[in-house]
Image (tube, one colour):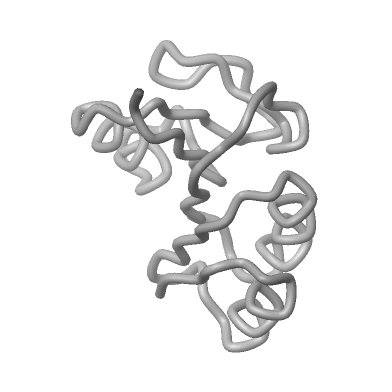
Amino acid sequence: MSKVVAVIGASNNRQKFGNRAVRAYTREGYTVIPINPHEDVIEGLRAYASVLDVPGPIDMASFYVPPEIGERVIEEVAQKQIPEVWFNPGAESDALVARARHLKLRPVV
């Protein structure tokens, strides 16, 4: 069974890293869950407004949103019990990483 990754900030714009990540994770065999409150489908995959809307467990979340958005989303990630969180360049902040650790998540920067 493949690892399930939620791409926070997934996009239909193929120039954005949130879209490139969806394609790259899919190519590598992951089960990809795009997260974007403004899209229904991204790269042919059903998109969800929040990780809390996704049925079943998620193994990791990969962030492609600014830290100020990430600070709100990290609470939902903790509620969903997603153990591993990747903060990609531009998505990280010291406060966000500290909050992830406080919530007992495993941040990767």
